Image (tube, rainbow, N blue to C red; front, side):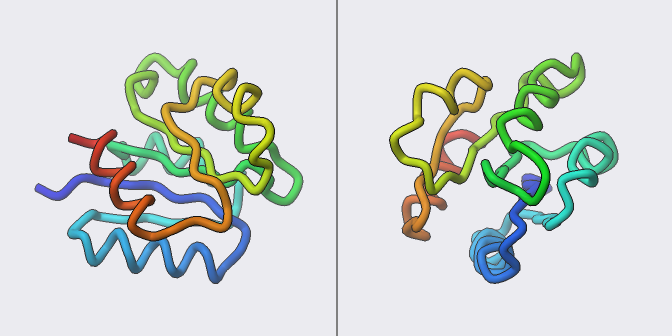
Length: 119
């Protein structure tokens, strides 16, 4: 059974590229551009990994990460945060994420980090 990955980004181009890349790598990918969908999708989709954009319209991806990590059923699920704010790695890790991918990012780096966290 393939591993499930949930992706949140409000940039449709990034969402499409990440979805296509991870699907090509044989992951079952569900993506959304709506931050309000994340927690219900985590509960419904039961992902093996979550990728969150740090700055999503009206929401902080770090806070979503904190919500996932504080949920008793999903605290073990690895979370990667996408961020264009490279200088704030310490702040991002404070939310409990397992990895950070800086934007713009390399697809090889994305696949390597996903594979490392999802083994």
